Structures are given as C-alpha cells and as structure tokens.
Image (cartoon, rainbow, N blue to C red; front, side, top):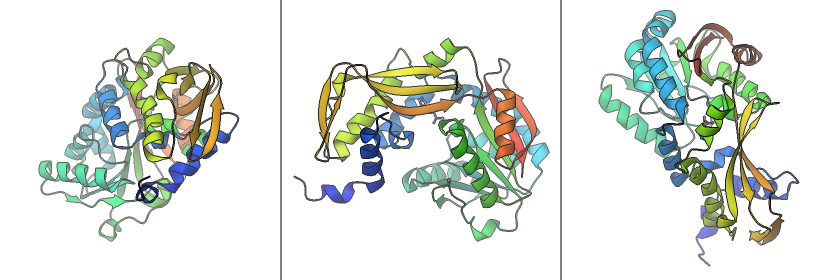
Length: 313
Ligand code: AVI
C-alpha cells in the first residue's frame, strides 16, 4: 500500500461517500463530480449539441450585456461566484467595463487558470482572485471595499442545490457583496421533459461518463473496489420537485468495500448523484426573494429555455 495515499485523501470526500453508502437512500453530493477528469468531462458536456444551457445562456448574455451595463451603471466591481468560465465572463466584462473583477472559487488551480486567461484579454482590468468556498460569506479584497458591486452567478449552478441550500447561498451572497449590490444570475427554465432528458443523457455518452467518473474517483482516491461496469447512468425527471435527477443504477447484485467497510446493492438500486432544478418564472422570483434579493429585470432566449435575472439586495 502506498504510504502517501492517506495524506491525499480529502476527509470530507471520504465522510460524504461513507455516509452516502450507509444511508438507506444512497446519495453522494454532486460537488464530488469535479476532480480533474470530472471537470474535463463537464467541459465536454457544455459543448454537446443536446446540452443547451451553456450555449443558450452564452448567446443570451451576449445579446443583453449592453442592457445589463446600462442598468448597473459604471465603476462596479464584478464578483463572480465560481471560477470565470472562459466563454461567458468576457461578454459581461466587455459590456460592463468594471473597475475590478473578483473571481471566487474553491479550487485555486481553476482560479489561477481562468484569471490568467482573462488577464491576457483584459490587460488593464484589475483581477483579484479569491480562493474560498462561496457557500459561506466571504470578506472581499480590501481594494473593492468602497466600490458598488455586481455579483455574477451564471450556469444555473443554483439549480444543483435544494431550496434551503439555495436560499442560504443567496443570503451569503448578500453578506459577501453588501446591501445595495446587484446580482446577475442564470436559471434554467422548466421545459419539455424529452429536451431535458436528452440534455442529461446524451447519445454520445459524455454525461454517463461524467456520472460514472464519480465511482472511478472513489476507487482511485479511497480504498475501494466498486465494480464500475455493474452500474449505468440514469437521468430522471422528478416532476414533484421540478428537477432532473442523476442516478447510478446497479445492473446486477453487487458487493464491494470502501475503506474496509462492506456494502451490497441489489440490481435496480441506485445512488442519487445530482439534482438539477428547473424554474418557472414565478419559482425563480420567489427563490430570489427568499434569498433577500429583489428581481428588477429578467431576460430569456426566444424559446424561453434559459433566464438571466438581475436582482438587487
Ligand atoms: C453545473 N451544473 C449547472 C450542471 C447542470 O446542468 O446541472 C451539471 C451537469 N450535470 C449533468 N450535466 C451537467
């Protein structure tokens, strides 16, 4: 056994995985998808023909950015929650011409990569990356203390949270940015179930590989021997909660061990790995209000697939 291995294990990952397998309804938080392989697979998902959110939101942002700039006014600091995606952020920065740009991400590596990429496109912009977990209030860099702020949270990442967590995050954002700030947030709309299922179960099998990578990650990083070939990817529409759920379903009875603990699953049993909530116009506004934000403008694409909402605290 590699004596260095225990040092590389994230204790929170181990705790979440073990708790998830011990529970009667097996579930692992979606945040653990994003190791290097998972992040690369997610990048591929965003380019898939059936995965509309990234494409539609980017085009929408490009179209409305001048109007957003007019509404928010000059001289703001743009604070992005999650590391700046190379495609979306420049559209906003070009239009808003902010005084500073503050990307916040828990992964220092992604933060440095995206900050470096943006710095070459916006050489005069002051970029102040913050390595932190934005689920909790964060003290912004002192350089932007006196500037009015615009939060940016694209991608409908909020949709990966259950309502209580989403509300807590929105309130943490008010604390981070301060009362009087604005927030531009992306939220995916409820739509035809067949369109949603295709977006989360693409014929190319990239989303399946993304989901199954979680089991590979458990085998790679923990002391585990899960037979990954005995699981298949499932994407299910849960109408009651208006969300796509991703699961990993055992295709036969399986037994395996994780960190010396034995687990069995019967054929057909699943591990719940992700929720991706979708919002009607009223749901979106209610969620924002519950999170202490007042929506002031809203834009959608021609087919009403995706919404960008501007709110103020
Ligand atoms: C990151 N997040 C907004 C994606 C989504 O659409 O919920 C994650 C994803 N899962 C499967 N495909 C994409």
